[in-house]
Length: 254
Length: 221
Image (cartoon, rainbow over all chains, first blue to last red; front, side, top):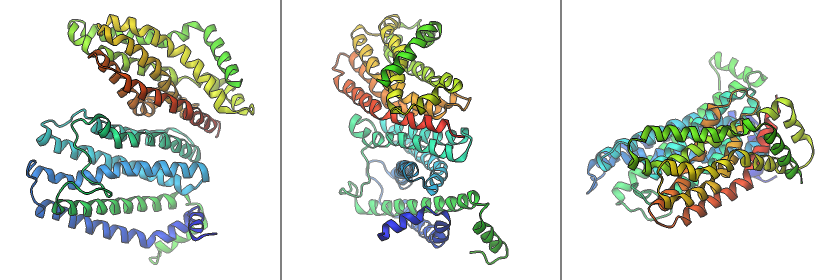
């Protein structure tokens, strides 16, 4: 079996994942927080003012990363949904369960910062522009996933039903992505892309890049921490979790 | 074959309980009446919002109708037989959905011009409104069926189905209502109608599989 194949095969074991990710968690959290501090201070204090929007543009250092994450997390849940349905990987279900509330909170932040930015720039807190509306719909899609999981009895059945809904909902993500091009309304085109030349100067763009990576690392740390808790909870009747808990309680837990 | 058999059975059942089959249409007419009543004193505004209002009402009507799509079959065990009979489930589902749309969606399409007329919709928008509903409501039925199948047998439909289905309905509403609004201002609505057709093609292709899978889940305990 190839190395990648072996890795994917091992992902089927929550215990292996739990043991392996311990060092990742601290690493991701430290890198994420450090990058966020650097990027935020850089963006809010040192980056130059925008010649049209003045200082109000600085909210992009929170708005753009969260808006990116809102879409990326949903997409990741769609992929996890396919993995769950095709390979019956327990970890994928746990990932969806943990990611949904995180993604919903991030989407809420993106909407909120968008509204705060919209007031001085567009003159209105909320505008029924195609893109803002799509992100609002994304928020409701996250909500639907959580509501459905709560409504269905039986963890396995609920997990697979939610996976189906996550896959169906993923259809919405490309519509968000391209709605700006389709309708070209109020919202300015995406200001951040890895593949294209940035439309803003480097001094503005670099702190944004730092913050995007910082947000990704921090959210990954949050999801990973949630995932590890979920593993402990769902596997709580296994020997290895009981051993781990005993060691943790006696102070030498790893 | 199995699709036709399933559709025939469902249509027969619908025909024998005609009163129930008229519920979506009655809801459509009633909700439109409430709308007309609310804005009736201002005919100009009513005419402006009429096509969008009709689309939203049709959307809610399709969703409410889809909500109980599998309830009776789930309760009397027919659903289990449908999943067990060994023929492709998605074909049976396709037949079921087609029959369901004929009963709950098609009447709305046929009555839409009349309701549009009552709500003072611009006359040049009525053909496109009807056409967009004709293309759009089957997609609504398909997507609503996915939500209904996911919640089948939970004993709590209504709001749960709404929370799941309504966000998924957004693209259909955007293009459906968009086509009618564009037509009302005298422009060509062809792009929006083609988008609706594309979404219908995608829904017909994928929704029956998702519904079949979700229905299988509903039999697990």
